[in-house]
Each structure stands twice: as structure tokens, then as C-alpha cells.
Image (cartoon, rainbow, N blue to C red; front, top):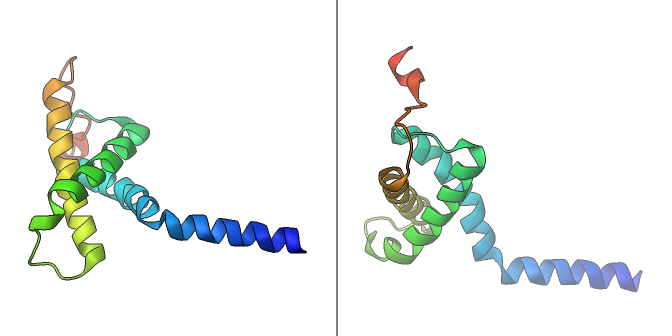
Length: 111
């Protein structure tokens, strides 16, 4: 039993130590999907959308979060800065992405 207890303590200390990183990853996945819905883009697939969302959330938390003084709740501030960062990153990736312009969001036009 002491081995199981020490393993559980190890897992809990790691979770507490890296809670901010885990929140950025989870919020980044949701934010990536949200930014893909808000911006008409070429489409990146699920993995690409998650990657752009996580990177955008990280960048948004680094650069945008300080300027959101009108939001008092920390979680809402993370989500808003993540959406802003992911949308900005989506626009930049779409500008520099080679290939034909295929808007994979045709469901918006009912086609």
C-alpha cells in the first residue's frame, strides 16, 4: 500500500505543479475549434485546429491577457485571450499557407 500511496502523491504533486499548462492545453483545444468556426478558413483538420488553438492560447496568454482589464474572472480572461491569439494565428497561417484556396466551411452558405 505505501507504493500506491506514494504514486498517488506523485501524480497529485505533478498535477498541481503543471495545472496552468494543462489548462492552456484544454482551453486551447476548445479555443481552436471556436476560432475555426468564427473565421472562414481553408480548414486544418482536427489535429491542426487543436495545434493552432493550443499555440494561439499560449500566445494570447503571453501577449493579450495583460490588456483585458475589463474581465475580472481569470478563466474568462484565459478564454478571451486564447480566442484572440488563436484567431490571430489562424489569420497568419492562412496568409502564408500555400496551395489552392478551398474554403472548407461551405456549410455557412448552405451548399
